[in-house]
Image (cartoon, rainbow, N blue to C red; front, side):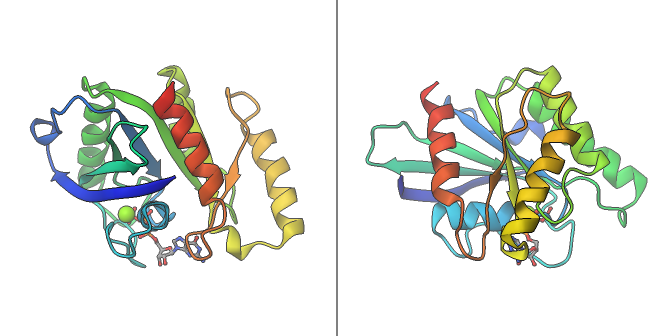
Amino acid sequence: MRVAAAELFISAAAASQFPREPLPQIAVCGRSNVGKSSLLNVLLQRKHLARTSSTPGKTRLLNFYRITPNPPALRPFFFVDLPGYGYAKVSQSERESWRRLIEKYFESAAPLVGAIAIIDSRHGPLDSDVELLAWLATRALPVILVATKADKLTNKARAEMKRQIASALAHLPWQEVIFCSAHSGAGSQELWQAVTGLLRS
Ligand code: GTP
Ligand code: MG
């Protein structure tokens, strides 16, 4: 899959700013600093489209990226880079306002076709990840599970992590995981295949 065009369409701070254009949307969610924005950049082959940072909690808005695939067999769609959850150093009230904004997004009439849920392949699913995944499962939304920063793992550790993830998520509808690295680009093709599947369904 190649990308003909990718642009930041809007950074939304409130539900009233969510795009009205009736294009499919894919939400990108995960803990703060897990590597959501970096993964989007590598998928879109744009180095600095999504702002990344080594300081957690930088993405405080819902960033809607409008993507035009090439060849144009698929319609344009939006990737929605959601603010990361689980960052301890922000105030309770700030965390609450993020949570409300994210919930408003999932409850809005947005034509969501699925979510990419990202976890850190070194840590596996933490409690806050399992909580989000369980919540997504109740919404019957197709989820692509990604373990990123896979460049930090040896092959042996990765195989072990695969087992650990399957066991931690045994109560959920999906245990298959795609290992990715924003540094090496590993996993991008497999992830695009899964994304294309969502867009075609
Ligand atoms: P917030 O928007 O703050 O929630 O963070 P984010 O999930 O968008 O993470 P971001 O992409 O900004 O990356 C956070 C840090 O992790 C940065 O220092 C990245 O360089 C690093 N990082 C992201 N992806 C990878 C990866 O695949 N491998 C390695 N080794 N580091 C990564
Ligand atoms: Mg980000």
